[in-house]
Amino acid sequence: MPGIEILVQDFMGVCPIAITHASWSDPNLIFGGVGWSVSIDTYWRVERAGKMILGYAEVGSSEYFQSIVGSDVVSVRPLERSPVLDFEIQFSNGDRLVIFSLSRLENFVVRLPGKNVFVFIPD
Image (tube, rainbow, N blue to C red):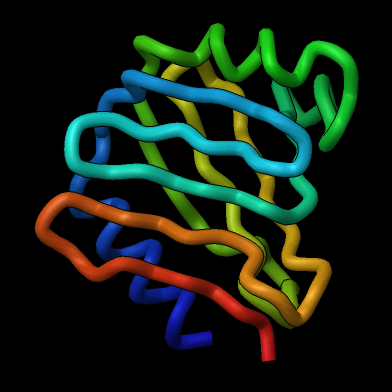
C-alpha cells in the first residue's frame, strides 16, 4: 500500500525522535515532540516482548503514555498481511504501539518535521 510505505520511509528518516509529550483521553491518543506529532483516533494495543500489556481504553492507558515521555520512537513499520493502513511504532523502551484502522473515518494523523502530513482514511 503506497501511503503506508511513504509514512514508514519518512518516519524512519527522522528516527530516533524524542517524545516530549503524550496524553490519552478516550478516544484520542496524542504523542510527539519538537516539530512532530501522532494523533490516533482508532484502536491500538501496546506489546512488550510479544505480549499485550495494554489495550485501547483500558485502565492505566493515561499513565502508560505519560511514562513514555522522555523515550524515543526508534522504528515504524507496516503490519504484515494487513489489508489497510495498520502499522506499529517501536519505542526505545522496547514496547511496540500497534495501530489498527477500524473505520472508514480519519483514523490517525502523523506530522513529521520537514515532511508530509499524513492523514489516513481507509478506502
